[in-house]
Length: 157
Image 1 (cartoon, rainbow, N blue to C red):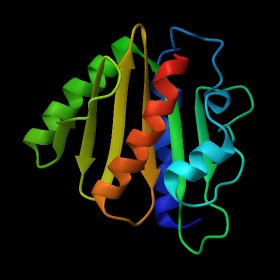
Image 2 (tube, one colour):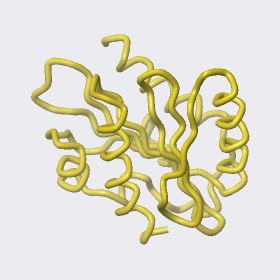
Image 3 (cartoon, rainbow, N blue to C red):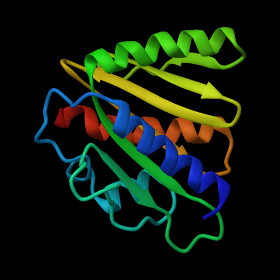
């Protein structure tokens, strides 16, 4: 695996292992978006969404097919409380050189940007989710892809 792929997988594992269960424990992240929806939003073909493990369904990963470099999209379901903690951490990261800016989707949302890495956090009711694109493209393009995906997930929560 290339370094960026490892970062994406590691982030998904860390968030999945350390986070509390979602308010909707029965929701499978892969069931919220189709392969075609993710590929259309991302602008590159993706394989079918997969879970980190068969029993942990809160994170879904779509990996770019037909690519020479890493192209990964992840969706991670969380609780509203976890979102609130991520927002506080984002504010601290902003003070340390990162950026945090509103995204305008769901009841509350923000982009967390550190270098060329971006994550879109969205809160709706008692649930929340994080969308991240791991690909070597400009930050604003990642934000656009993440926003397009988030707008498809919000109505399903």
